[in-house]
Length: 249
Image 1: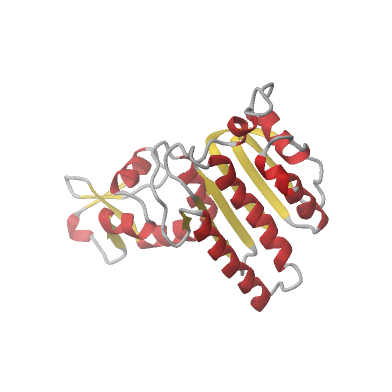
Image 2: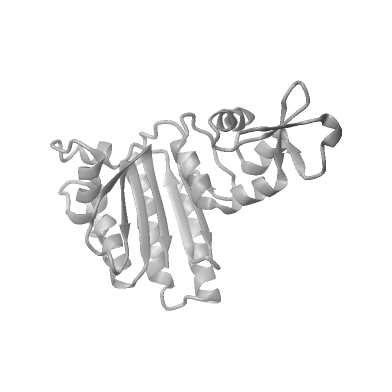
């Protein structure tokens, strides 16, 4: 529920909607829409109800990359996310992936750096491979990571796994089936399969090295780790057209 306060009580901890939009890398209309749907609520000032945002809420929102990526992937209207995390092209993604791998080598995980980067690269490149020339609105991917939390988040607003797999497996009828196929079967004629990797490669590394993976497309998702090596697909009421992945190591 929104807070409504007097203009006399505006303090330095509040940020006007225009400034908040720039900080988050979204449009003012997007913030208004999030406010109305209670995804990210504002503080309303005065009789006119001008929208302001608490600096603490903005900081929390920016630091919760999973929430930011999920909202971006699921929002009804597309927009370009913050440039710090937005990879509009594959070249931008590859450059940031190389920086990420270098940071892993220098800071904490030299022995696992190549495997972690391979997982992230496979997921990110899948987004570009399967949406090339067919992005529904905003092309590219969201890519953020925390070395201290050992967590990586990737998301796209692409066609989703069901739509791309149906081109070669026309009998697929829902996202749950498509997600299981993507992680368990080699699909002949599917471009990334020629590399011999795909999401099956991701699954093998995650379960063998005790990493963790959350992956959602459409209304289907899975969680993988060393203790949950079997691909068990679950369904959710939260629908996204593209894909969302969280890797933990």
